[in-house]
Image (cartoon, rainbow, N blue to C red; front, side, top):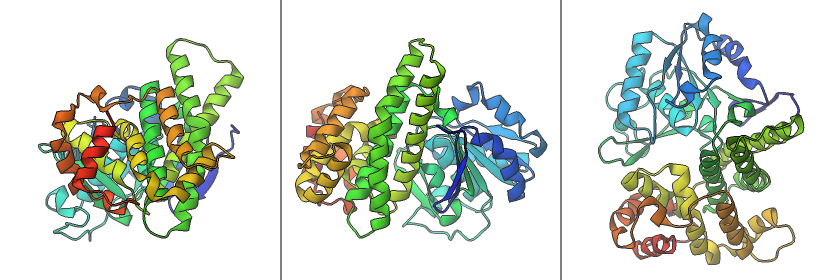
Length: 394
């Protein structure tokens, strides 16, 4: 990958390329931020490059809130708001994957808004979002949710684990510094799970009901990038874990693959403004009932969900199949490709790996039926269908 750092806007200003994170101080100055709170998770805060990033913002009085882990919950947001207020911050740097970036958005919302976070739930709000939201600069460290280019935050209730969506265009980060070097040390399992999350966003956006050729085009190119890069990223991660030393050419290839997935992730989040589908409803239920990592849940459910959808959208499946297997004349080839990819990168082939049993599907189906993603699925999904999809996932 060239060392050039590129700029593009969708509509967030994105600075993409190796070393982009080193522009952070300049971006904060441009935004007029004087006192910054860095929001990240417990694992990222321990990475060897993180102290350097924090120290580069000493002139901005940088403090760190790292109280994020797992699927983010309201109590993490509340603790972050207290950190924001006690630090007297006027801007946020969100560093990490989807969880800390979503928490950062929620903290930014609640910095100046009263009440409970869920008072501002999308579609069920009881309070208006009518006060200033402080600026966010996002520095992604995974290629999965694409939250850095999204207008929403997904936060769970501490007790029920039910996921709630808070949405407002003002939650969109002002700048994204997308530096693929930050992904080089990502473990193979996280690389695989987050990569399947990105793929699921792209696939479901392309299949979602409605007319949005802009999103369709972005989704297809994103699927191509996943096909070209995800397995390579997982392989590189595994080789690194096994202690293999990379030469300069191999390191460059790894960096290029990580960059491809970083772009695919952002493209997925841009494309799914068109909508999502049944995979996400099934995955949200798994996260609610079993606290499953969102990307892993998507990865496990995607093959069964696509087998369910295939007959309802043969033309779309053929187009996706031709992206990943040029020359094919059968949309089934795309479903087969998903299965092969999942196996090759270590995604479990069965819900049993999560501790789910066939006789315990009732709570999953109940949550999935209430989820807001499946109404845009290309094929209507009944309660009976959800049972069948989950059973197929065994």
